[in-house]
Amino acid sequence: MLVFISKRIGIMALTMLVVSVLLFLVLEFSPGSPATKVLGQFASDEQKNLWMQQHGYFDPLWYRYFVWIGNFLSGDLGISQRYRMPVGDIMWPRLWNTAILGFWTFVFLIPVSLVLGVLAGMREGAMLDRSISIVSIITTSISEFASAVFLSTIFTFWLHLLPGTSGMINGFEFKQLILPVLVLFLYDFGYVARMTRASMAEVMTTPYIRTAVLKGLPYRQVILKHALRNALIAPFTVIMLQINWLLSGVIVVEFAFAYKGFGALLLEASLNQDIYVIVSCSMVAVFVAVGTQTLADIGYTYLNPRIRFR
Amino acid sequence: MADQTSPISPAATGTSAFLRACKSFSLLRESPVGMIGAALVLFWVLVAIFAPVLAPQDPLQSLQPFAKPGTVFAKTGSTLWLGTDHLGRDILSRIIWGSRTVLIYAPLATLSAYVVGIMMGLTAGYYRGWPDTVLSRITDIILSFPVLLLYVIVIATFGASGSNIVIAITFASAPGVMRIVRGLVLDLRNRDYVAAAQTRGESALYVMLIEILPNARGPLIVDACVRLGYVIITIGVLGFLGLGLPPPDPDWGGMINEGRKMAMVFPHMAVMPSIAISSLVLGFNLLADGLREISLRD
Picture 1 (cartoon, chains in turn blue, red):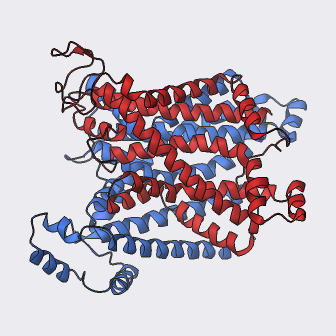
Picture 2 (cartoon, helix red, strand yellow; picture 1 turned 60 degrees about the vertical axis):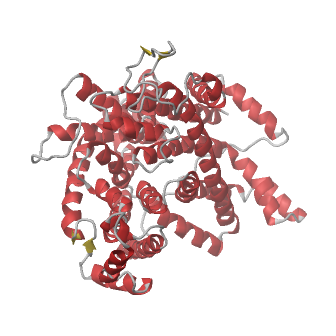
Picture 3 (cartoon, one colour; picture 1 turned 180 degrees about the vertical axis):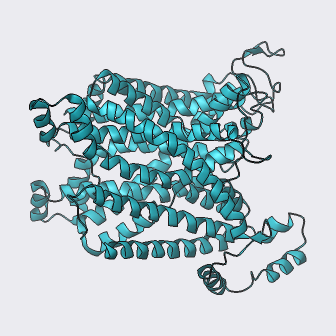
C-alpha cells in the first residue's frame, strides 16, 4: 500500500516536472512578447525592453525555470503580470469558487445517475433501459456551450426565472449557481449513468445472482443486498475520474456564465500569456488529476477484495 | 485499474474488407438508432457538399442587422428563415457554409490522431518491452492532464489557425487511440495467423499493418465515431472560447460565441448554430451506438 502510494506520488511529481518544463518551453517560443500583452500594443520598443528586463525576461530560460521551481517548492507561486498580485492570492479563491460549483454538480449528479443506471441495468434491453440509454446519448451529444445557450434562452430569455450570468458581483447568490450546475449535470450524468448501467447489467448475468433468484429470495433483496454491492464498484471509479473531467468542463461553463472560477482564470491567463498563473493552474490541475486517479484506485482495491496491491 | 479493452469478435478471414463493410452497413438497417444517426450524419455531409447550391444568401454579405427568423428581406423579397446576426449576415447561409468548416477539420484532426495513435499503439503492443514502457508513460502523462486545458494553452499561445487546431487535437487525442490499439494488439498478437505470418518471414511492419490492424478495426470504427463527435465538440468549444478559426469564415463555435453576447435580446443567433452542432454530434454518437449494438450481436 505504502509502496503503491509513494509510486503514485512519484508519478505525480514526474508529470508536474514534465508539464512545467513543456509549458516554459511552449511559452518561450510563442509568438508575441509578454510585454505587449501587459503594456498594450502601442508601447514603444524601449518601454517593452525595459519591462522585459525588470521582469527578468532576458535571463536564460533554464535560469528562470530554476528560479521558478525553487520558489514553487517553497510555496511562492510568483506574481501574475496581468493582476500584478501574487498568483496564490488570485488562484486559491478562484479554485474555491470552482469547488463550490463542482460540489453542487456532484450533489445532483451522483444520486441521479446511479439510480438511473441501476434501474436501466436491472433489466437489460427493457423499455426503461432503452429510453435511459437514448436520453443519455442525447444529453452527452449536447456539449456544455450548446446547453448553456439552450438553458439560458429558456430560463432567462423566455421565462425570466434565472439570471443569465453568474458573476456573483453582489456576493454569493445561489440562484446564479443553478444554470452552471445544470449545464455540467446535463452533460455528464448520461455518461455516469451508462457506466453504472454496464456494470449493473454485467453483475445481473453472474451465477450468484441467478442462484439468489432461483433460491427464491425476494427480488428487492437480490438487488439491494447482492447485486448493488458489486455493481457500484465500477461507478465509484468513474465518478472519481469525473473530478478530472470537471476541471475541463468548468472552462466552458465559467466562460459562458462569467463565473469567477478556476477555468475562467486559466483561460484568461492563457490569452494573456500570464506565465506564472498558467503554470500554477496547470500544477493544480495535474495534482487534482493524478490525486483523484490514485484515490480512485485505492478505493477500487478497497471495495473489490479480488484485486490486491502488488 | 484494469485495462479497459473492448471485446473483439474474431473477424472472419476470407471475405474482403469491402464486402464486410457493405455487410455491416446493411446490418445497420436492423438498428433504428444507428439508422437515425447515419441519416443525421449523411444530412450534414450533403449540406456541406452542396453548400454553394443550398445557401440562399452570401454568408459574408451584410443584409439587415438583427432580423428575426422568418423576416422577409425587403430588397430582394427573400425570406430569412433563421434571421440574421448582429452584422446582418444570414444565419441559415452561415450555418450551411459552417458545416464545411466542421466537416473538413473534424475528420482531418481525427484521422491524424488515428494515424499517430495507431502507430504508437502498434509499436507498443507488438514489441512490448521498453518501447511499450516509454510510449505508455508518455500517454499516461498526456491523459492525466485535463484535455481542454491543454487545448486552451496550446491554441492561446500559438494562435488559432486550422493547422494549429489539427495539431493540438492530434496531440491530445492520439494517446487515447494508442491505449485502445495497444490493448487490441496485445490480444491479437498471439493469434495463429500472426504466428503463421511471422514464420513465413514477413517483416514486422507487414504483420502489424496487414495481419493485426485489419482485425482490430471493429472496435476502432466504433471508437472513431464517438471520437469524431468529441472532436466536433472540441472545435466548437474552441470557437466558443474565441480560440477558433479567424472570424470572417463561418464557424459554428464562433457563431455561438458572437451570438452569446446578444443572447438576452436575440437568442436565435446562438441557438441556431447550437442546434446544428448538437445534431451533428448526436448523429455520430447514435451511429456509434448502432454499430456497437451490431458488433455485439455478431
